[in-house]
Length: 116
Image 1 (tube, rainbow, N blue to C red):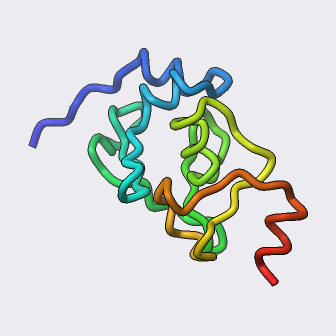
Image 2 (image 1 turned 120 degrees about the vertical axis):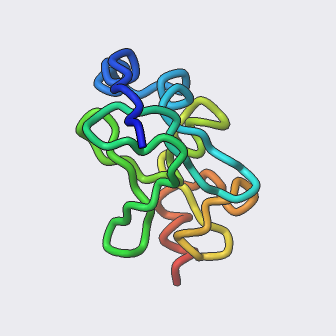
């Protein structure tokens, strides 16, 4: 099995402040499934086409980009709307369900209220 070469352009992008354009060059988001997949090899491992599955405390899915961890439900907003809201609420309270129809922008107060 041949290894895909490290994409140095993607690696350089990953180290810049995260924008929608950079995010879309690194990951693909499927709003119907809520799944992010890697688009290219930017480090020692070849994750091209693989699903982002890292978790934070087993509750939220996260991914490391440019040395910083990002929660994918927040990245979904950046990917779809070009901004990250103060908080993202999972309407069905399943924090691993990142389908676009299940996510909504919320204030911290509103998001905390929904957990009660």
